[in-house]
Length: 537
Image (tube, rainbow, N blue to C red):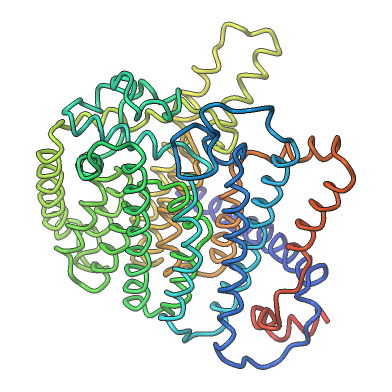
């Protein structure tokens, strides 16, 4: 044990040294090569400037909406009758315009870069100065979310699978056994990604109940069901905002900063509203449950965490933390047994009622790893497995399948995540249990078989109100890089520009260069400590 402790301390020291140098390097580049260095430091003058980042972020969202509205945009599904605008006609004439395609990509990437810059600087201002008006921040959230609410489903086709599973549920076709293609020639089937056409659903019974109810409310209209799900996820993001403010106040943190880091996070807006992913519902219920636990309302906390688990299974980690910390840090292991049993009863009752409402049993449990069919280099456990498989094949060991190697590396990744989560749970009350829960969820994503950007929201919304030290830097880093995971268009943009006319190249460079280098206003000076700004100038 002593050797393990020494090894752990050595790893921690090396991490702190390397991470510190990396963070310092990023800060130096920002100070030296961005417009931030153009301002001289001055005293903070209050929050009257908030209209500026609100407007700039809205412009960024409008750029994204504009780029995704082209008929051949690579960021959405280009299929007839899947949205209200921007879709190809039933009888297309001519060939798609390469110029419009490149302009679409430039506008979306330009909007993303502008949004990231604005949010990053606003988050840094909120870190250094407390007391921003929550009412103003709520209006800013509404302004930023507006374009995402009317935009077609972005960066993912999952919402079409949700809609098809809702239609299946409404007709009592078991989504835990059958895939969306079981609907036959239904309009719900056409937009579903072929990868998931015959895949059973891994979602909890409460989501299937909500999903099926939405299909009934919309009278089995495919497009209306998709719109209903988008609105449901938008409401869930508002629930995240409410819950994280409640949580921040319970932890003695600035609610404004937590709100900006969670509900106004580009990762949340782009993937949970723009992509209409059901992770928003899970995260909203979970963060409210954790906030209630912090406020010493454990039964309500267990109920909300159980409801979150009935949407997606990873929320069960929140149940474990609430039960474990119920009696406080000095509770013995024997004393913790009763809260754990109560948590089991509440979770069992909630899942049981949800299962009765959905009507399909507990088949979702065996489907939890069904997304493992996706092989992405963004997931370290999968990337290592694919790399080892490729190396073995290049050495002539063709008999060793990549699938077998992936089974091993993914198992090791999940085992490591479980080990870290147990260690964080055991030391949670010393480290801050909400913070430990957020880190556990992030680790399960990063070490899991598939890393999707919307999965990161599970832990980040909790860390928004509980982070410590350098975790703030990594929270920002994951939030601004996450939306770019797997995003299409970058390679096509570069290839298209090489073969395009000079005028198109000039327009693309002007848009992207402008959003990267244009000063955003004097308010950005308050995102840096004064002594560091003096060094930069």
